[in-house]
Length: 418
Image 1 (cartoon, rainbow, N blue to C red):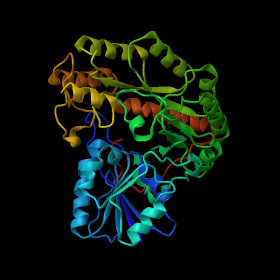
Image 2 (cartoon, rainbow, N blue to C red):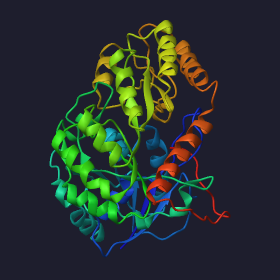
Image 3 (cartoon, one colour):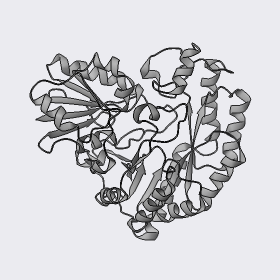
Image 4 (cartoon, rainbow, N blue to C red):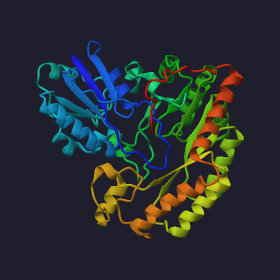
């Protein structure tokens, strides 16, 4: 069977420079397929979708809500030609009913241990409309190393700089943050992979630069310590979402190669300021992720927040507008208050306001989002700040002998955004 996996393009945040990271969902899905399935892959962010390529089945992998409309458009095109289409991924799980109108089948849940059934049905021409495994989660020890061989590696470089490879050491999240859909997708249960399995996968990745895409590594202290201790001899350089603000764990993270972290900045408290200082004292960079448009936010609050960020001397900051995605407590609240403006999913990018703010107009919140980007990067552009982070990682790699100079075929197209 010839299976074509497609990762649809989505609209980018206008204030971010364009570069592309290799997607994670499709390569994890490919690893769960039976070994006799012939796989081809197209990431629309860096490749043109070739019309006419033969496929027995098309699998469309969608991570984001704003990715769904393009996915539906692609699916409609293939189905008109008689090619069956199955959808999967987080975006599909958030939009199952709409997606069924554009698909022969949808897969809800995690793929490990399920694909033999799905591919068997496809071979017989009997795909079920819905494969629902959302409440039947696989044992994380069954997760195989992602199929990065389906990627065209050289497309994921930006101006000669090697982009990170994405990897995950766990699934699920025990926290219940109100803008987040993770509890809806997989329940509030932290599900770590066995550390030895994670290390085995990392050993097979030639790239020295990694991004742990786990929701948060700060969910089980002993597991987190075990993971960092196992990473130390590998000399990898990595990015992650939050790690535990604990002296022992922070020291281990730095020794294990933590390059920088994404840290949510939720207020202007000394607690946040101290957390940032403690990371930077250990030569760990910080990208602050800032959500604008919470009910307590007014113009003065947001401007004070930007001033606070400048005082923290963050390496980078990313500003997004709070967005009521399906499956989130936020969505439930705003629907009950009749504050949702529309369901034009292509505009659910976190770059524009799609709800009625409590203390601001829609236009004012959009204006303040732009103000935050422009003010934070007024003295040093985002491109230059990114370059400084990469100079830092190169310095670290040279210090421990892991730096590799990459030669690219410059005739190939390099990619665009996160």
